[in-house]
Length: 84
Image (cartoon, rainbow, N blue to C red; front, side, top):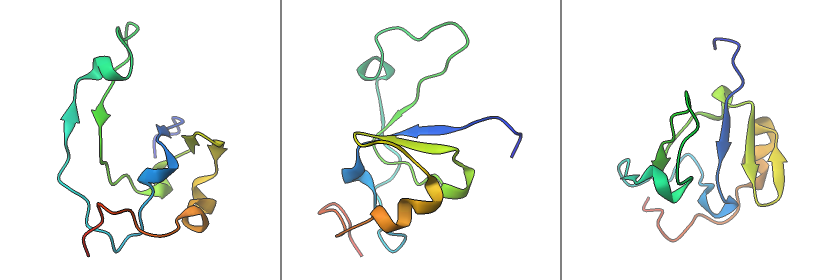
């Protein structure tokens, strides 16, 4: 919303439909993502984060960059962790 590019890094196995109730936000050590953050960079290591797709510039997955407007088409069968 501020004109700043915003990217999310996630494996596609974490994609879930809106109807899926995700676990509460679980924060893990930032060092799992990167041993030391560069100056001015904040690393948040959340296992589940329901970020609205409309806020993202792109989703970075194991398949490359994905346009968030096309992400819904990439959501397949709900993950086992999805409790409806």
